[in-house]
Length: 72
Image 1 (cartoon, rainbow, N blue to C red):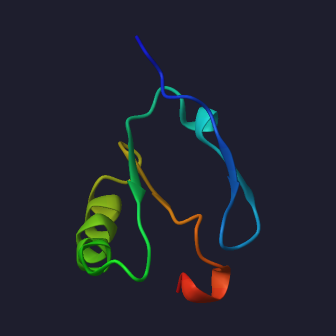
Image 2 (image 1 turned 60 degrees about the vertical axis):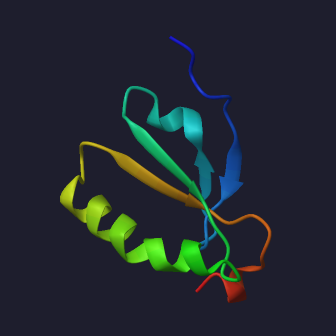
Image 3 (image 1 turned 45 degrees about the horizontal axis):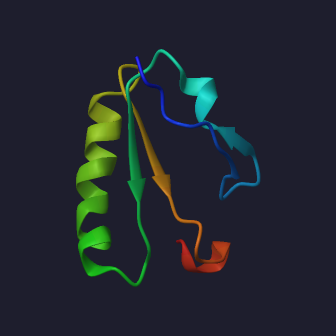
């Protein structure tokens, strides 16, 4: 068992998010940016998977390089 290193970020709505809070739940981490066409193209599929797998898998999008206004 090799858990990912823990990190803490602030969500778009201002709440604190800690990866370790999801221990025991499968997690998909998606690092993305608005300027990245493939990133934008995959967002609808990730959203659909998040809805379909709610309660089974946590899908977490991480955009740390842009300000909140650009993250949509």
